[in-house]
Amino acid sequence: MPLRSDADRWGSLAKTLHWLMALGIIGVGIVGLWMTGMKPPMAKIGVYALHKSIGLTLLALALLRIAWRLVDGRPRELPAPRWQRWAAHAAHFALYVLILAIPLSGWWFNSLHGYPLQWFKLFNLPALAAKDEDLARVAHAVHEYGFWLLVLVLVAHVGGALKHHVFDGDDVLRRMWPFARLRQPPTDGGPPP
Image (cartoon, rainbow, N blue to C red; front, side, top):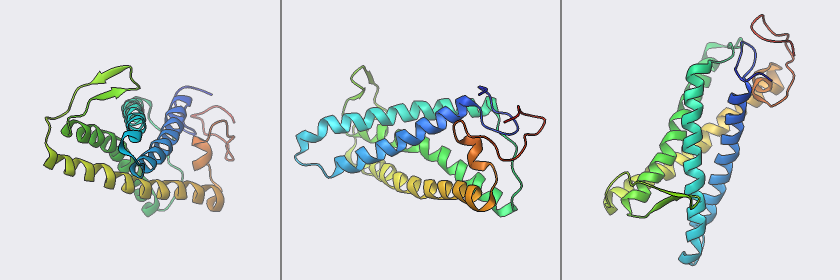
């Protein structure tokens, strides 16, 4: 599987970053929901540290993914009604904004509370702001509501991919699925399936 994307499919690096982020988002979401209901507070410290470390990892992956996307390009768009192409572009834009905003707002929230921030106990990260409890409430709201907005956009994203796969019978999902063979013959821009 080639590293770079071509006219027919995503390259191996784009696929790897996509699926690592998908697994990370599911993991950090589960840990985040679990930790908010934990009692007593001292039991939460290790779980919060794990949540923060996964979130920072996702931020680094998001930056790498965006940088790669800018130099790698993308496969050609498959034929679809204009409104579906617009919806797909809007969903992808929202995903990129949210995969940056959610971990950054978590880092901001952590900083505003004056807590130290470590990445898997390997090194400390600097605070993004001075301690401010009032502003911390804003950062928490951005973080929490951003997560729920991400869940909605991801449901639309997955639903759209499944719609293309099941009902339209095209290769939208197969182009991102690891090791999947395309149903349609490739264009001149890519190797045969």
